[in-house]
Image 1 (cartoon, each protein chain N blue to C red):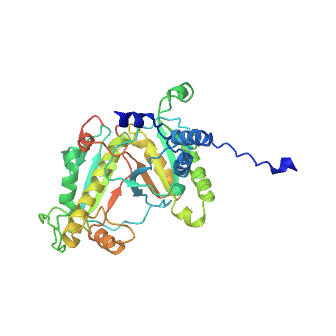
Image 2: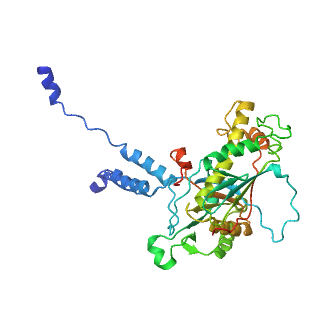
Image 3: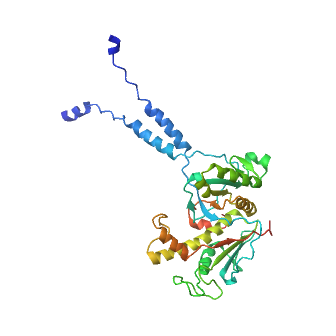
Length: 194
Length: 164
């Protein structure tokens, strides 16, 4: 009976912190926080039979970008540096040749695109093109569209397109994307300088 | 003088550390939740290309990875130096991509399967021939949402220099 009356000794929790630290350090070391980032693209669905006659597109509405196996650019039959590509693409998309686009600020050149809705960027590379170059070209073309959308958003809504929330500003984003629809088409790569 | 002496005599009270385990546990739980264990053992060298117009891949559970690059030095005797495809933990041929995608899709719930994104993690020196072949396989497997995994460059000018 006397034994039962003795108080239960308290568990020494002094080393608890040590154990927790040990675990903490383990997770600190194994953690990889980096979220994956990249350029989102959509592939065209695969069809066994060739699509019967694609709708004809006027030559002036196509912005051809060719990349050869030496990672050189040929844009609209003109040798170009990657740093010039974005401005050139923006000029083409924003050209507004038929005057139907009210927000465009292009030069209305008759040999360039009719309006952003009709403008198509056509990208073709060689099988020998490096992936790094390909991503860079893709990046510049996407950036051209993003810059135009940004300008449109600033002028129409006075807000930055890039900082808009996908859920909250759904309607606005939809309108902006409709104003400058991203039309990048990829042709089957060539195999010249493999 | 007397006053100072009195102060010196007083022992410094020990800092109460009883809340320390709590703090540490809090941190621990944070890291436990935030941790994503490295899922695959990379057998190819992947030096990702750089791009500025990049988007985050929000939900990891929707993403499936395809790696492409030259085999690492320790695998070069066996697999050579030309770029290869890696799926999960093993080298794979192009024909393996379709079954791989289908298998990955089956593991996901129906809504998720429709939103599945293929992340192509390829070395920037890989030739487009290989990437095009991968893309063709993905198209055949109906995995049309893709993402070219890239890094944000530290300074944008570096993007346009010829070395990269």
